[in-house]
Figure 1 (tube, rainbow, N blue to C red):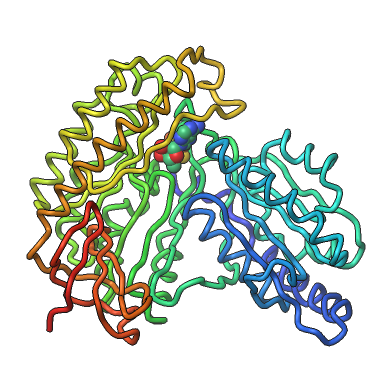
Figure 2: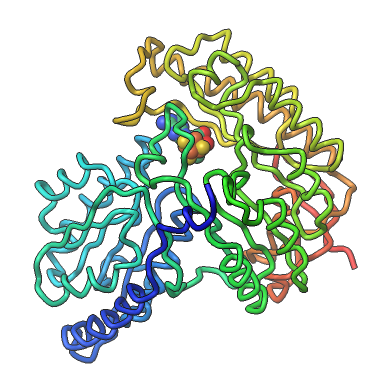
Length: 472
Ligand code: 5AD
Ligand code: SF4
């Protein structure tokens, strides 16, 4: 496929300009509704960094329309939940939160409630909202973000409920305003959607097909972030390794090199890498680029080949381990993290033990571990799943205990060594921040250091929490 075909999904610039006209209209209606008071929005994001980044763009529109942001839901004039569908737990939390809004809205009937994101892309979800949650004013799916001003204007003006959910392969909308949550940490989406259809995963159904932003747009946004003082840029995509795949545009490895060449004191991270598309070329690029963090989040999901096959992951344990060993060869200090699913349908205890042996063999810095959660519409949700939830819970604890031992050993090995840490938070005289390998260290220091790189020597390790001291 050539790039011109890939880009046929771009939202024309005129459509974004049209939304700017809706911003002005919505602003006028909002001002008259507020009678001189300032309008406040409460925005909560469930799920992954992709959603966090989307929310920054939605907040960009809200801010232009005239909202400022609040953490106090009771006094908010607009509540927006950007939802996640990846596991049952996130799904239940969203419904719990929406239910809890009912008494709040009874006290404040002018409050506008907006639901968007992955969950709203599922028909059974938005139908339930339509029928059983009449106090929700606006629902839109993942393909309507760039149209928030128009949708909100229709709600503000007419008082009618608005539902805007449709299925499409997806497109790319450039030119939306961004209200960033942080000043020194920035999310930078480089692609959207997913083509992999791992058998357990809902993402390809709710986010559409994989599509890459133009490298010139990504580079322009990277330069903007750096000029604004950003020290930590995370490039986002479901499978960053296949950035621009099928086109003669820049590969992900090249993109890393280009961002690395931008002048400034910052570091580059990325997520998520898919083992089936992770190449030695990419690992070489990581090794060469001094601003790229030597941290690779490489979800393995399972350490057993039969289970990996059933998951439709497209790699074997051996291929995974070969990537790990090449990564360690070219970056001896690399920090590896991963995602793991316990209790995939039909997984046996012996197969699960292969996952335990894999994590022991690799020695991950940390893991995100999940019990398999059936998602309606996915292939795995139709597979026989005989192992009980209690049994899966025991396996889960076995895995986390094994990882705790690994992490605690890795942490002890860090004692006495000095790391470059970006100080992120200040609390009670203590700073905390992450190393390039994404390991958190607490150290005493001054609040003025928040947002700067510090040299920190690790002095002690309690399980997997590290303490250190500033050097120099
Ligand atoms: N059940 C449990 N975990 C899941 N993930 C994705 N779908 C499911 C599911 N149905 C996990 C995977 C993925 C991470 C983002 O969420 O480990 O890498
Ligand atoms: Fe889901 Fe697999 Fe795509 Fe990741 S790569 S979003 S797990 S389908």
